[in-house]
Image (cartoon, rainbow, N blue to C red; front, side, top):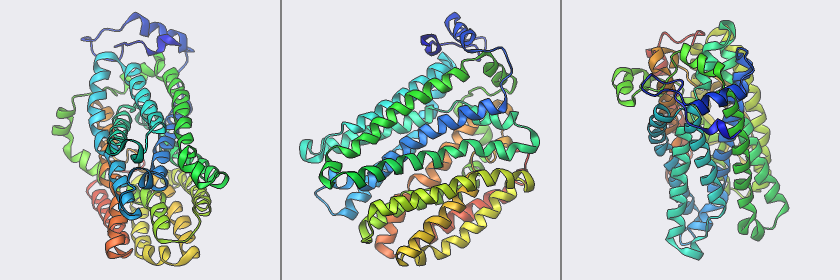
Length: 450
């Protein structure tokens, strides 16, 4: 397996001739048959699920652990806001990671880029498991966590392997909505596993044991999952068939500056088209954990169990989105769900402030809407990019959508709700829905063929 990590340039222009070792790796891994959309889908699901698991492990720890562990000098609200600020660092770093990784791929090849990115993601995630407390080393603990979080963002930017775009382009035309949603299943799978681990630890450890060592265990698990995902994805992308498909579809990295200059409109529309879904993403996963912890007497173990039930509805919604999109088109699906999210935003204050029943309703309805919308959110307008820009454009569109729609959502939602009330959380979500509808109206070309 060692040869799989060897640099190559077989997919790049003649300036970077292929290395023999990389060709050997492909010969070892290839079965000399055409890669089917189903095989590509497996690689997409495995890769996305591992990334989302890392993502949610950190997000949950930002609510349950980091405020008291790193910011004991301030109140629970302030500590959580500080933790959410560090949480946002990864989304700021992610586009930078994409720029760096594209340069690495042009010089050394896809295998090296992906190996570096996932090793960085795994090591920074596992590094958090060894994080000292503020009591032990003072402000240096905050600095270390910030550096590790930035490392996670750089790694996520570098983890783009082109599989989602390749899947969309090779899927049967009448089932492109179905195949588009497969990669999105990584989100509910990742959240369910992460929430389940914390649910188990909270329910079976004392508060002292959980804060001392229990919370660290999910970060070790995240590292192990990354190792498995790395080899699963490398085995696919290091085949001759995969390289041939990428070259045939012209899915190669291009200059980010050149792409931004010529495709700026598509980048902006792509980032905004699914903004409602990305805003809702953190408002039903991360933000409610913080609000319940600070303002509700509700047991956190019980609330995590409720979210786990909600994420099952999300998974069902993701699958249903593929069926719906293949019948009515992706643009109409996204537009309809953005409108429903706008309606949902009006009732957010009443549900969150409506006791346990209201909170459960918020979680269930929110996760169901999230699944239906998020299932078609990935690469919603990447078909607008000319083929030579699609590989880099798809990666950057995703980075910008996460940054604009989700990166600061927990921080903003908790900040405005603590100062002005829950009505402003609904207003924040409504603004995302309006932006999505505006972007979709500018992109009339988006339909089932995307």
